[in-house]
Length: 416
Image (cartoon, rainbow, N blue to C red; front, side, top):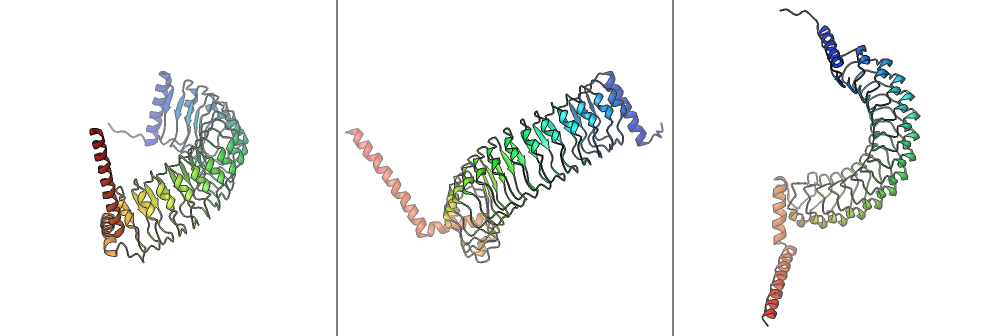
């Protein structure tokens, strides 16, 4: 049988069937995501029992005010369409918990969204918003707010009223400052502020005791407030791609931090206090102006990755040989002439990168060309042949003999 219906007609037939089935079965969920819809199916507004409605990934340009008739709606997904405005009537959906509006063409929001007092997640990312209505500060049950990838130049002070907020995404905007009131978000766990135009971070952010992730990379920061050292729960702190001239020693108090990114700044030195970061696993310092590495970094017992490439280092402290968990050590493009033989004792090391150190004589070039394994073997063999290595071997033997003598004396005493 020949079918002459166009794809558009087929979509209409399928849509009518889906809507009829949903209505007959009193379904509470309707999935019309990525169906190629160009207009909103008016029939949806008659499905009184719908609680979850998926309409993302279509080509919708308009949402009717009648959608507010769905009084039982709890989740509404309108992401990745072509919407330019949201009807203020959506503020009547008093039971709504999740509202997805990301990936559209919105330039402003209706103040009535501030009436959605049950809302827990609000997705407004990847739009063209330049400002936010103050009324969003009334959403005290909100837990996640996605505002990234817009055109925001400032953040409303009223966001500091969102007492239940746990995750705030503001990256990829045009922000130049952050209101101090954000320090009132006592439950905040994640704060994304990267890829903006920030030149200053308020010291009050140090009061966010539950904050676990703070992203500040790719801004215009020249300094960091010492109060950030009070973020006792933070696990990830990114400060790369800024204009930092120094790092406050107070960051050494971040006892739970596991990742610290300081790449691509203007740092000449880093404080030895960073050696107190007992849980640190990744420390990134490449593309700075470092000419010195504090030996205290050898205390970072959990460190797995250390990037120091593209700096001005002339030597590497032998104390780095104490980093027993280190797997990757990047030292490319510095001014090194030799590296400590003791680095050969890093048994977990998988990558030791030394390219671009034109004056490096130890290990020799023929060893460098063979890669990490050959470099480590050369360092180990050189250490064994060196006076320092022999002294260490003699020291170990002496300790062993002393232990054996003590055991013999104890046994003799027991016999007596």
